[in-house]
Image (tube, rainbow, N blue to C red; front, side, top):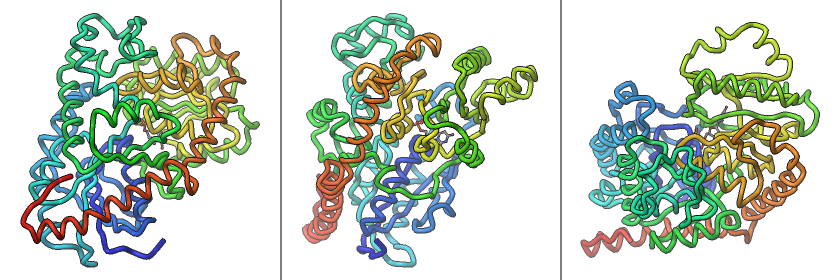
Length: 457
Ligand code: UDP
């Protein structure tokens, strides 16, 4: 574990919680395989180095300021981030290539988030091999690749945001599940996805945080589109079990002792990830749903979950008291530990990919209320394909009867998520393949330098 192999990997995460987590988990996995890890990060949402004492942290020294972007305009935010980070990233990477750190371990490869559209081009200019990590699953990734076809078929011209019409090209997707369908101007999002696919196609390989047994059909389709080496090695968080956290907000651990006092499988854990913003009426509906369920619940009400940050304080005191009697609210939870806790019986989620995979890995059935991006696809697969959750179109009670069947399916998938990581399992072999692939870069780099040529594949 502590034997280093004289290869440094530079990891460049997109500065949002759902992207930082898998990238830092990947860092821990590859550190355990002997690589030295440098996390190259933006000043904006910088990770906390003290939680990862084995890694080196370097900022690109960007001047990105989130307040310059409209909060609800995620594609605009990502495009601005790309504009602001490209030059500082290039300068910093160049600096790192010309002067290795104090331990003199040379850089073998860059692993960049797939939504940084400039990183692989920069790496190619600087003659560094680049791998790409998409933060989502393979199924939603495949849906991104067919968005131009769906647009051509006219799905984006109708008001699809609520449409229950089937997407005939990709069952069991409904029109309202299509990523970007809820945007008034989806062109910018389509441009981002298109850039992402182009970047991966020109890279030296793609790493997926999923497992073959979960997403085999989508992975097969993705392989036909991308035509680059792929490494399917998830669920990341289960191959690098550690107590260190990548949370940008402080985790409130009091919820663990509260869970310790609850009956087995009795608690509904409620969290909508790091980016979803709800209206006051939506959050009230959730609160009423929880009260109606008559189950204990643990609810993450993070700052900025509601448009009005004073919402919780302004709510009538009897409402808050009723909530507190049945459950507990925290600003941020140690989610992986919560989902692994025996008291947790269900997860009410926005269906972000990390949350979905974390829940599947612990065998916790889900109640899904997706909002945007890949969440609609994830939720549809959770309910209709993997059958480990229900899609909540109405109240919480409506589909409650399915509980037993869901729990059974969830425990089957939990076992598959665990088996793939054991020696001989699909993700275990995938990781071996990834390690060998990276180690080969070293000898290829050396021979290409000797021959004066460089081929990114
Ligand atoms: N998370 C957490 N504590 C919380 C809520 C979320 O640690 O209270 C973590 C969760 O475990 C997951 C990530 O934040 O790894 C959220 O990622 P996801 O892809 O589910 O959603 P996003 O935030 O990107 O919408």
